[in-house]
Image (cartoon, rainbow, N blue to C red; front, side):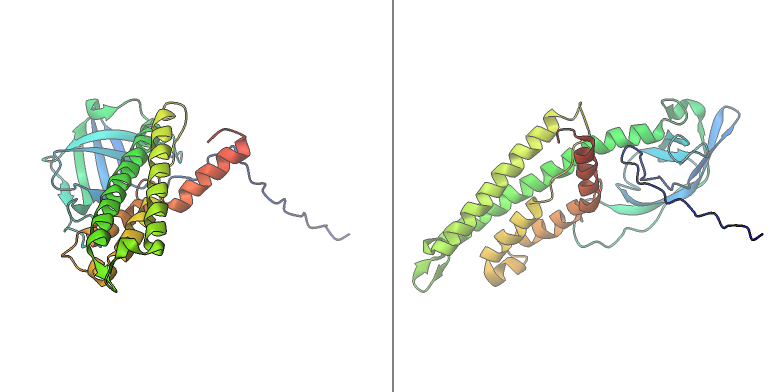
Length: 259
């Protein structure tokens, strides 16, 4: 008799499971009273300038519970920094790769217990999202103020730009978006201790639309609005991309929780 082939069961999507596994390869091995770290990190803000580094490294095999947090001083032997990355914006914040070549630190430099690094990182991420949102909000506020000032002074067809109803509607829409963004940020800060907040991603659009009100001049460095547009663009990537933020929101909807 021919053996019947067993049908493979399709895996069901489990909404309660943390399916965003952490693929982290920097190793952190115990050697007596020390830890020895090997590996590298990319996109590290302040790399080479900061005096102390909170390093997430692998002390075990488990995807999340195998990660620990260890403090590494800048002058530690074996710690190296790559060249400054050339970026579209955020040039006031240096970004480099960081290399660990048999970096040895005392075991007392560990933060928390072994395996708690992922939990620590996620808690830091929650606050970090609020920080990025606040940066975006400040940039959007500045861009709106500058755009309003420029549009009030600039004339076309013997009229100020603000005399045109289209401009009035545009500025009114931007002010409304800015106000709702501010309220959203405050609500997220209020609920920080209760759950994971998401960051804002609407403020970039405010900056971008404000640049449009400048016309061609908005593209020149003579006016700072172009810098805010470049700097704010990365906020849709930092501390979790906009796509990941939507995943977080979707999971909360499935759980039936208030956002």
